[in-house]
Image (tube, rainbow, N blue to C red; front, side):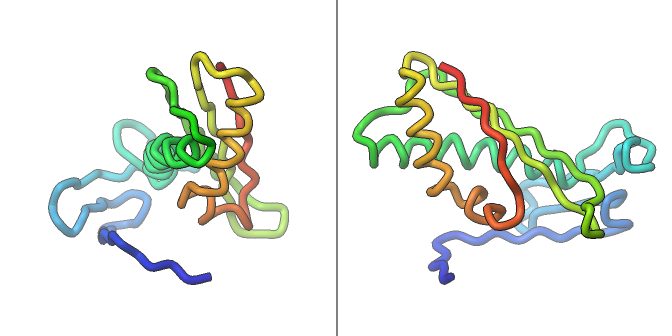
Length: 143
């Protein structure tokens, strides 16, 4: 696989990783990281890699819907949303893995058209393509 990257960004994590800090190289965003209680940490205010992945995946998929709609010669309805739920836990094979679920709301489209748009978009979205080989994404498509 070859990707001709048109945009790149860089971030650095410091401290304890999941209980440290992460910042974008350009200084536009810096976040305190906190380990969730479910993973043995203190929980509380702060970000974690799963929260950041959910933010990125939902925004990326919503943007990719527009490209998918162009391919299908339609439009993404006004008021459309994408919610992402990302989980983390031990894998049966050892190590850890993530789970992903997307809730795609496409008001006014028929169920068939909405489902087709989501399928096409799943093949376009960079986040979907990045995880496709290792994570089954569960979709809820609402109209």
